[in-house]
Image (cartoon, rainbow, N blue to C red; front, side, top):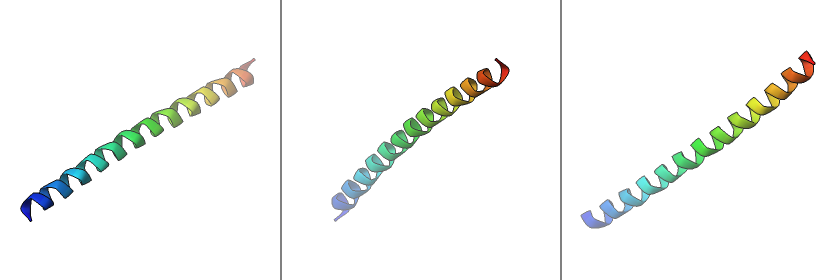
Length: 47
Protein backbone atom coordinates (compact mmCIF):
# COMPACT_ATOMS: atom_id res chain seq x y z
CA UNK A 1 0.00 0.00 0.00
CA UNK A 2 2.83 2.39 0.83
CA UNK A 3 4.43 1.75 -2.54
CA UNK A 4 1.13 2.54 -4.26
CA UNK A 5 0.83 5.81 -2.33
CA UNK A 6 4.40 6.75 -3.22
CA UNK A 7 3.73 5.97 -6.87
CA UNK A 8 0.56 8.07 -6.87
CA UNK A 9 2.28 10.99 -5.18
CA UNK A 10 5.11 10.70 -7.72
CA UNK A 11 2.64 10.86 -10.62
CA UNK A 12 0.87 13.82 -9.01
CA UNK A 13 4.23 15.57 -8.60
CA UNK A 14 5.09 14.94 -12.25
CA UNK A 15 1.70 16.25 -13.38
CA UNK A 16 2.08 19.35 -11.21
CA UNK A 17 5.59 20.05 -12.50
CA UNK A 18 4.42 19.61 -16.10
CA UNK A 19 1.46 21.89 -15.41
CA UNK A 20 3.76 24.53 -13.94
CA UNK A 21 6.07 24.29 -16.96
CA UNK A 22 3.10 24.62 -19.34
CA UNK A 23 1.70 27.60 -17.44
CA UNK A 24 5.08 29.34 -17.35
CA UNK A 25 5.55 28.82 -21.10
CA UNK A 26 2.01 30.09 -21.75
CA UNK A 27 2.62 33.15 -19.55
CA UNK A 28 5.90 33.92 -21.33
CA UNK A 29 4.23 33.59 -24.74
CA UNK A 30 1.33 35.79 -23.67
CA UNK A 31 3.67 38.38 -22.14
CA UNK A 32 5.86 38.53 -25.26
CA UNK A 33 2.82 38.93 -27.53
CA UNK A 34 1.45 41.70 -25.29
CA UNK A 35 4.82 43.47 -25.34
CA UNK A 36 5.00 43.20 -29.12
CA UNK A 37 1.50 44.60 -29.60
CA UNK A 38 2.16 47.34 -27.04
CA UNK A 39 5.40 48.44 -28.68
CA UNK A 40 3.83 48.40 -32.15
CA UNK A 41 0.93 50.53 -30.89
CA UNK A 42 3.32 52.96 -29.23
CA UNK A 43 5.32 53.22 -32.46
CA UNK A 44 2.11 53.88 -34.40
CA UNK A 45 1.10 56.60 -31.94
CA UNK A 46 4.47 58.37 -32.02
CA UNK A 47 4.95 58.11 -35.79
